[in-house]
Image (cartoon, rainbow, N blue to C red):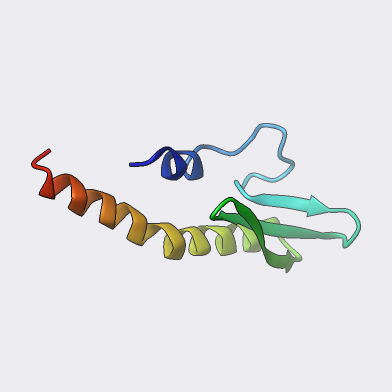
Length: 82
């Protein structure tokens, strides 16, 4: 796997107020914001009333974005005989 994929899978930051990686509280909106990084840019998944809902959105987005990248890496590895 690439460094980018590994960083995406790392555990949440201890400074994060939520229990979910990619979920942050927005005091301005009094809501939880879900974010994912795509090609080096932060993309907002929207605002949510509950941190859990934002966390589920982040997990779903990461599965859609990165599952194909992981599959491609595994196929390339198999093709190289590793």
